[in-house]
Figure 1 (cartoon, rainbow, N blue to C red):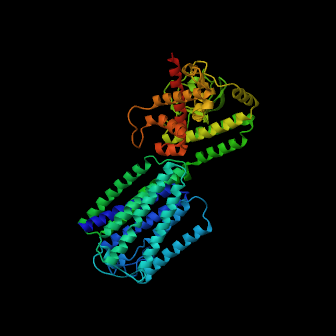
Figure 2 (cartoon, rainbow, N blue to C red):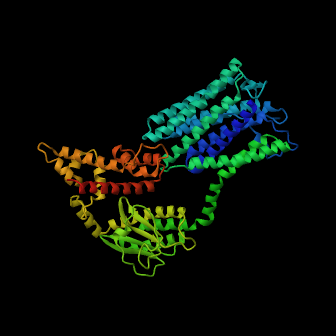
Figure 3 (tube, helix red, strand yellow):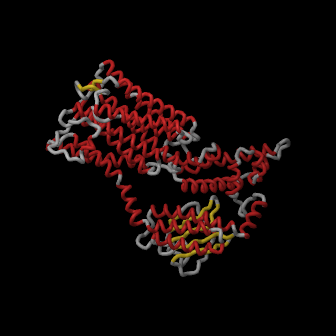
Length: 611
């Protein structure tokens, strides 16, 4: 039972280590931290493979090709002929410790100064010396005896205490680096990921002292204990680095980590079942299980990478052309007279990219609508109202949403520059499908954000827009003509939520309930500001869904309330909020705009029912 359990645990740890290394690298291919962390995980995976080879020594091959010999560099000569003893002396855990030490130095704030590089170089020299010493001499381990299921199967050599001391020193240095980084972390979520890496380093570091004590006391400790410690540390390191890299790069991993892991686990389990049948029925060497599991995890983890690579080579011409057009537009955006021409060129590239039957870019100009650019459109603009085109997020239009000849419009993408909607992008149905794919919509949203920024920059050069902006800045905030409170007024109040002096003079201070409560004698402007503050809190609580706060992943209906609460009441950074909700920056901005408008509507309804 101990043999079976040890083999299964090492196989599982091997698969997880390989998968996590690939996952980190493929999600952050430009991150040096991700690549080094992946190398550390793959190095620890070699330890698990080493244990499997020692427990199931493969038979000596009849022919040893030259290209195979470099793959066996870690193991002593004659490993096939001398059984489990030579296999057990093969793989070293030292490179993983030194690579992880390098990672922790990169995580530290500041640049890699000469002292940090010196420590890195010393660590790698120590790792190479340990590998050579175990490979060619008996200074680390003299010989083998006993049962490979237990740690005492290896007899320590004269340099073994020095070897263990070096591992302990660099493990402690890694721990110190992570603790200092966690203490200096600017956000709570970033600190949590660093603390998770601290715990993983401690757990992995216990393997060294436990092994040393076992050898010194000649206590037959099962090798599986070390595998469990390293396996737990591998998972914690992989998850921590994945989330830390996503946080630094301003993205979220959402449920991608869980889904990807479950898919790889199921695929590896199927391969494992098939190969195990071959071992039982046909007598295939047990080590074949490890090789097949490695190949299964490797090939299926790289499927998405290969698909993206070939998409880039063969199908991404339109994407590159679109980005080139947008860069060209950015260079000429300051010329207002060329805005329509450049928008038409960009829209044409965008329409060909998603195979749209037609497309329109409609800009908001005061209360009027202006057709700024069109693609495959030969009709006059139908009678549209600005309120029909105002939207906080992309809208998949129903049939006949607009009048002819725009009745077949399929997609409406608002063009927001900051909190102001500059206009809309309307697309007809795609040529070869009923609706646009989710990936196409995501790319359209990205392009729409850039187009909106460029339109805003071009308009800012216009003298007419400058005059309008000046008028808006001079005019005091006021309620909308239809009685509703302006979302801009609510947003400004939220941004200055703890400035009672500002709140006492803002548009919300003119609400009936505020005026009535502040009319008492002795009431100051600060008291009026506190009343505005409390009114905003009361309205915000109405956005809170019923029930207790759910655990992660948080349901979507909580997003508007939590975004406003964390962003304005707790002053948390946007990246931290996005990480907690597992949403992208675009979704965060659209949800925040919608939440502010909902809060403004709640305040308007409270004002309408005030006595």
